[in-house]
Image 1 (cartoon, rainbow, N blue to C red):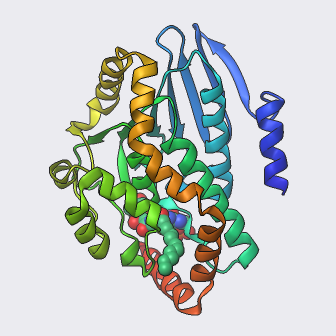
Image 2 (cartoon, protein in one colour; image 1 turned 135 degrees about the horizontal axis):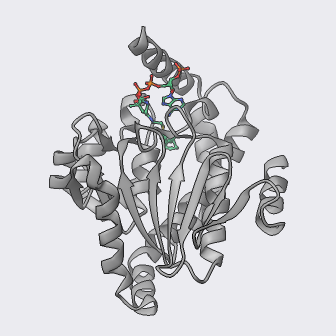
Length: 289
Ligand SMILES: CCCCCCCCCCC/C=C/C(=O)SCCNC(=O)CCNC(=O)[C@H](O)C(C)(C)COP(=O)(O)OP(=O)(O)OC[C@H]1O[C@@H](n2cnc3c(N)ncnc32)[C@H](O)[C@@H]1OP(=O)(O)O
């Protein structure tokens, strides 16, 4: 409830919590975890996730992300968004495991509702979304990229991308799966989902998880040049086409949002699933020591 109130305040009272400033004709607004810079005449915004150390999608981060997106969507001068990360070497580590571990069912339900909301807003956005994937992008990180209209990834074999949920002992929800199938086809998605494959940039390109792989220092310039190409298409025809391609997938979640929240909550609350998450978190810790 407190988060919903903060969201309303941020959105409608302008930038009481956020900042808005003008720099050389460019505008920027920032929440704590999301920075948005817009470039005047081109109508393009660059949205940078900055939730260190790994841009995990905590409830706060999801909320700020959704609000920022909503602001851009409502700003008729903005036609395209480049989504990227400010955390070195990480695009996004995906959903925040600490939001799904050791909490109560009401928290899980609230968290999942916000995950759904961000996904629906991103996936059905009227704007052109291009992701500049400048780091690791597992699970929910991959989901963010898959929502975009075009994906450019840095050519660094240390960076991997994919829906790896099964490696954590959890299951990608049907709408993650649907988007994967839409992107890479049924057979590849079936295999990658079961194995929890994290693709290197070269593999991701081959299978179609990303559209282009470029040297790391060219990710942003390439994303901009892709955006320029997409901006040349009339908005109305591009938007209607995008809607035609994505509506069925979005509608299948919209129709059963409440049931999906219940499924998530009961699944994630299971002792066996909590145990799997505990083991995975321990593994992440041990990697360090
Ligand atoms: C019947 C069907 C019903 C279905 C119902 C639905 C079921 C549930 C669906 C849930 C869908 C889940 C989607 C997800 O996104 S789950 C998250 C998946 N993410 C990962 O697996 C990534 C894990 N992290 C990493 O691999 C690495 O951290 C990474 C490569 C991203 C970075 O490596 P690096 O070496 O740079 O950093 P560290 O590993 O040392 O990490 C630094 C600290 O950050 C913590 N961390 C990492 N990832 C996460 C995360 N996702 N959430 C929270 N915290 C994270 C890590 O533990 C370190 O913390 P400490 O410094 O405290 O040790």
